[in-house]
Image (cartoon, rainbow, N blue to C red):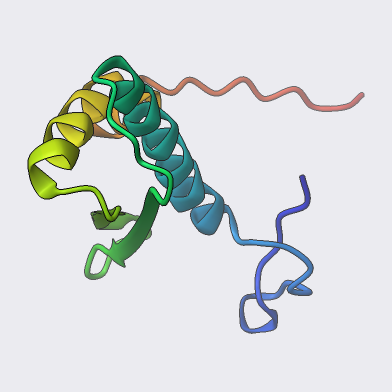
Length: 110
């Protein structure tokens, strides 16, 4: 997968920014999890769509908030429980809610 930055950040704009990939990972993982939950509940969601809007944390190089919109023509009474169950099983949601430890290994050349 090619990722890049826009020209104003020194890139060539040849692919999505890493932060856009992160938001897409959240949207796609939650969408799959909600579809799985709907299947478990025998709820039809043929037009399921998930949109994620990231918001930068003021003065910090990170997102401080994500707005997630889950949309379907299914009634909210059927959709809400699917979203609730799907969010519990979404790996990306769970990873962002409780960030993992990150370790770095630096390997230099000779």
